[in-house]
Length: 113
Image 1 (cartoon, rainbow, N blue to C red):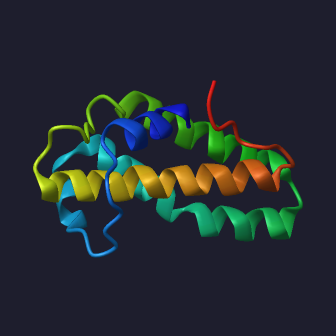
Image 2: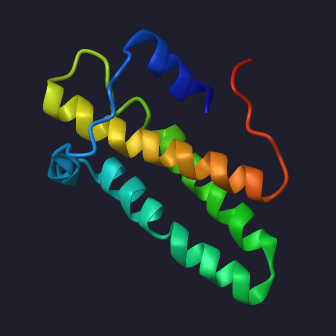
């Protein structure tokens, strides 16, 4: 999550909810993150039924690993505005999910080191 704060500090991207997300289809890394993000509500429904928090923990670890491996491929800085906006929506969304999930398991996400 520290990477996000670094991007926010150096690039200051604006979140555009109308960004053209089809741009992400050209990147397998971005597509994989987007698919994982889309599973979040399914994971929440599953843990509500099973009462097994390890499902959420495993999901968050997997999402964090995907982001960690893709962060250098999905550059935001010095990119065309359309690409920047689409990538930022993807990264910002994953940040929000990680924050929410970490809080749900009773921890506080770190803001900076």
